[in-house]
Image (cartoon, rainbow, N blue to C red; front, side, top):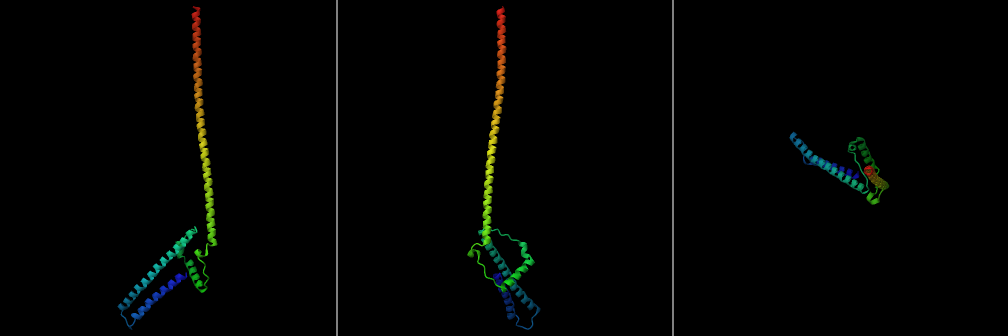
Length: 207
């Protein structure tokens, strides 16, 4: 805030000097024509416009560098910063900032030590601790999930083996039943052959 205020004061002094220079260099006569007045105002407009534009560009670039520093420090401590562009035009908040600027310069407060000089603040410690706890919970949940997946794979494998055994038993039972049917047919044929032989022998004996 103090840095921005000092830059603003310097810019205003530069603009004031532009007007003073015009007064001292051009306003030396008592009367001027319309064209002369227009020429002086046009020249003053160019100078003031250039000064204001340069200051606005410099302010924008300075704000970018400041935000970059803040975000870089936040990343080191695993903090997530979010910005709301719509709040930049909030008149109520802007008035509060203006009031803060006035009271801050009237009642200066002791400077706080930067994070990189005074160490990690209590807030950052809480954020880091919370992040580590969340990481631990996530790792535990992932471990439990992998355990469940392994158990599901074991159950699936056992189910596949059981289905394979059931198919094997069904095939063996079918082969056994076919074998029984074949044996029954063979025994029937054998009995019929024996009966035929017995009848033939009886007929032969009778003759």
